[in-house]
Length: 244
Image (cartoon, rainbow, N blue to C red; front, side, top):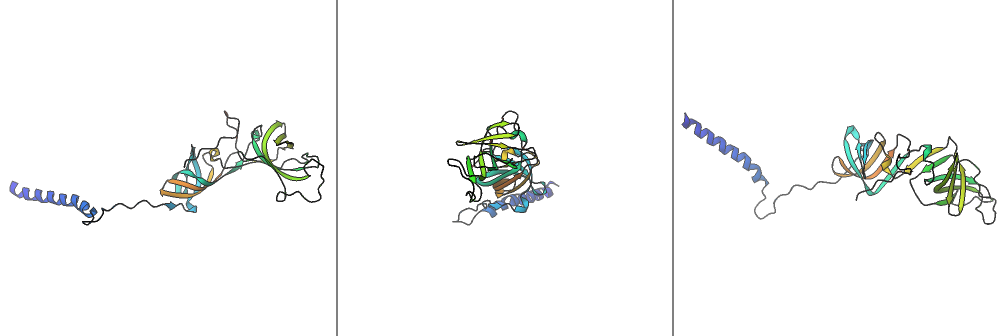
């Protein structure tokens, strides 16, 4: 019986050896040619329809997003990325040190004559006073020597003082007292994506080598809840750091 089993065992051994060696032989290049190498991963673009979803979590310089069909993506915005975070702000954000933008009307004495209908928190910027109409004052307005002409202006600068509903802005040598009524719009429009929270709506575009790992070229987040001051840091939250 042993003589019949031995040839079968040898055949099986030879067959298994061929199966193990065959793939290696196929991977070898002809003599004199460079060995075959696996193709390098291709850079792909995320389709706009696949880039819509919600924020899952926010980390240092990155976000975890749940996009189409529940797929999770780790997203790092590129340094040149277009980032837009929009939403509303709580009234407690109106405090000294905050940088705001608002449109006002002033008289010939430089006094603000109407309550502000909208205050925007950009998270920082350059103080400025820009007249309406492409930066030009309306013709025929009253002028007083040494004072800014009456008209509509867009103010950008830091809050110096808050007393009840009146906010004082100091821009250069000029001071403006602005009444902010309870029904005024308080908006957030910033690049600071660290303000995002789980559940916020997101639209993203970018490039990837491997699904789930995206370098974002465009990131837009719509905040679901009003921005409030952090409990420890009573200033506008610090922007998240971006990695190269």
